[in-house]
Amino acid sequence: MEIIIKCFVALIWSVVGLIVWIPISIRVMLVHIFNVSKITIMEEDLPKEKYLNLLVETGSLYINGFKNIFRKGDDGIIEKPKKERNQNLWLDVLWALLFWGSIILPFVVNRLM
Image (cartoon, rainbow, N blue to C red; front, side):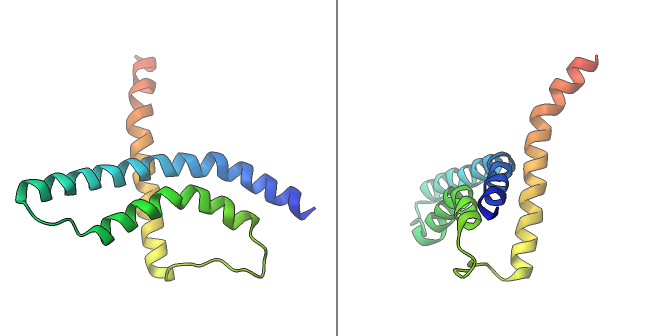
């Protein structure tokens, strides 16, 4: 019974996680491109650890969701502090809504007119 629940949750995560992960990935890539451009123009060194960690965390976000779903109960989930996690969650969800809204809304408005 537990595996059926985990598969159902994984099915939900495969859709919802992807809907949230795509805009977050695009935002992080745009920030990275902007920072690389800025550093190139200013002729400064790129603080690799800061930006590479952000890229790695974002890239593994979707896959880690599946890992956490199928993780055994005694392994536990490594989490950030609650205040930081909640703030980032709401900002990421807001960004995802704005991202998808800016893509879908013009089609809806166009259909109504």
